[in-house]
Length: 212
Ligand code: Z5A
Image 1: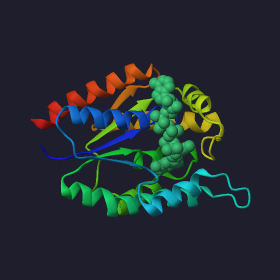
Image 2: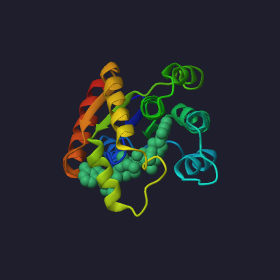
Image 3: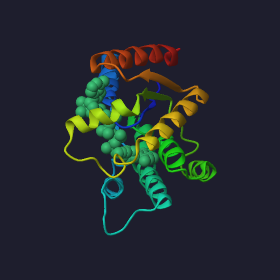
Image 4: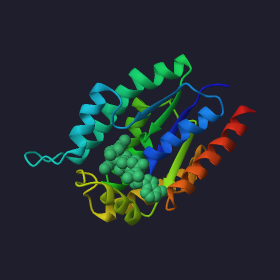
């Protein structure tokens, strides 16, 4: 079977990291052992440095919205060129914790940057690379943030944004996934065991479909 590019999307605390691991486990159960787990921004040396810059709250210098967008795309470009494309070429499966839909939801809807600017970056820097499957974990932002706060002492710079930011991001995600035939919504408001079961069943059904 041809290797695939799978992306997990969702707002904070929706359980993406957990779902990525479940997807890897599910693929293994179907005999697919060559998957590579990555995260955005990150998973390259440069990408991890950018991740640190965008997540930390720097009191000396405020990061501008457009700088943040370009940093996300710098990290993404580095990841595409040095990891995703070469790994796909080798035959590996890619499981990515976030991809370009995050930029439209967060920088576009959340920070209100012109969507045309983001779509142009996507056109020049990402296309014609498209995920084969996007699992969107849908969660009420209040529940998501509660989960994050429960297990952490500090919130990072993006997590500290107002709830209205995450409400706009979620609304945009829902719009985008309704328009995207490769995207599947999963109700992530439920217990972790139920979400894992849903992720597993969704991957199983999708694999059957793409195998044909
Ligand atoms: N960002 C952006 O703005 N634009 C972009 O283009 C891209 C990213 C690519 C990445 O940081 C940040 O970058 C992110 C968006 C921005 N903003 N922030 N902040 P990150 O990777 O640290 O943030 P995240 O992607 O949102 O990850 P997260 O906050 O760790 O959440 P998660 O991966 O969705 O969830 P998790 O780690 O699997 O679970 C979080 C906690 O909830 C953990 O303690 C779990 O045990 C618990 N959990 C998970 N599922 C459940 C269920 N079902 N019930 C109860 N508890 C659960």
